[in-house]
Image 1 (cartoon, rainbow, N blue to C red):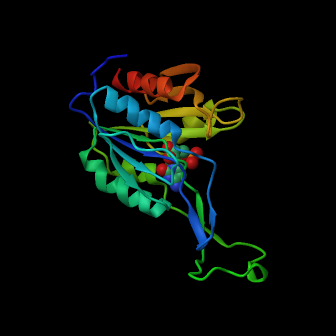
Image 2: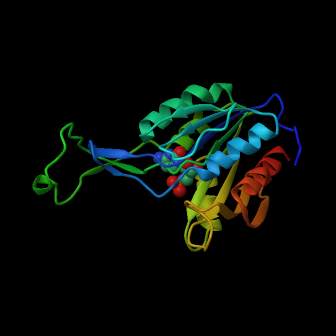
Image 3: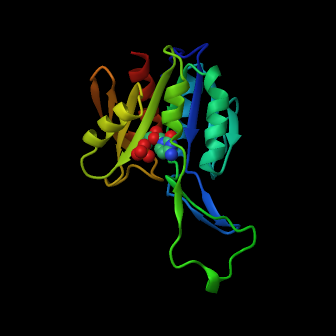
Length: 216
Ligand code: C5P
């Protein structure tokens, strides 16, 4: 695209899934691979931004020139995002955060026979909602809503309840989009009531469309 419209801007992105361990070998996680967040980092870098990428376990290399902060758990991601928030102009929370964690952690591997029949869980912090509380008015905060079925209504609810500037309603029940795919489709929604539907395209194209949307 050749645009340098993010030159001088600082973009903070979260990517991938978080893991909440029960013992050293078992965790609660999700299928996120972080490819959307990686594409966002590539697009922002290409457009001249200074990019920080806080990411969960990933099987890709961070692009040269991007500051990478690897994390595992939601709490680690929360800490990193809150630490880098004050230095960011645009924040995109594309990570799939585990919503819950096991209440108990065993430092020793639990033998199969002593695995609990039911796993007591507790909620993890809502990171993007906290970022919204701490952010300054000039900072743009964008969330993602991975949904099945009707994607717009729950995304609008999240836009409001988490006090985001914009949200990406992202269907995960369509062929060749969502978790793990190189492609994606979405509807972008913002606080002003704008809605833009993005037809299936590569995650890199979608990342550029999202920055176009954020800038305008
Ligand atoms: O509620 P839901 O998980 O669908 O919300 C999606 C948005 O909230 C995403 O931007 C995700 O990164 C963020 N989120 C978060 N912390 C959580 C759960 C979700 O920041 N514990």
